[in-house]
Length: 129
Image (cartoon, rainbow, N blue to C red; front, side, top):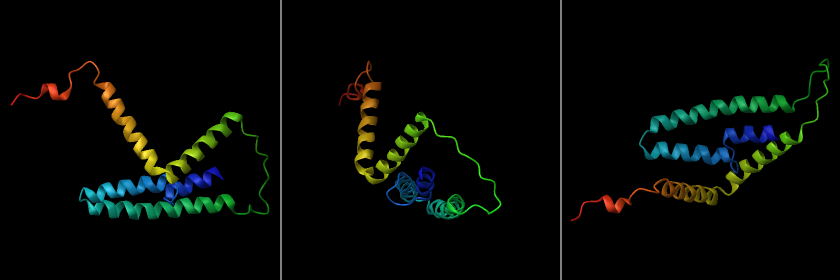
């Protein structure tokens, strides 16, 4: 199930992190005036969606009648926790992307302010008028 969610996110299905990732990349390309690059990216996304959907259908299709059945080992607790965290993060970044983006921008501003510790403020380096 998590692989299916991650593939749908890579395709750019809404309410996943991949949708807003593609949205912001294509919006930035359009705002920069490179329409040809945006069109190329959209065509590439369409081609990639074909491959992702093909993989998704092969995962959930019935195995061949003569295919050997193999037992699958139980996943470890660390693997289950990692899958849970990444699935939740993919959904949270897709559903609550506005607040998540604002929080990350606030964190980046805080980090850049902390990085300047020990130096003079920018206003102090401006020449007097």
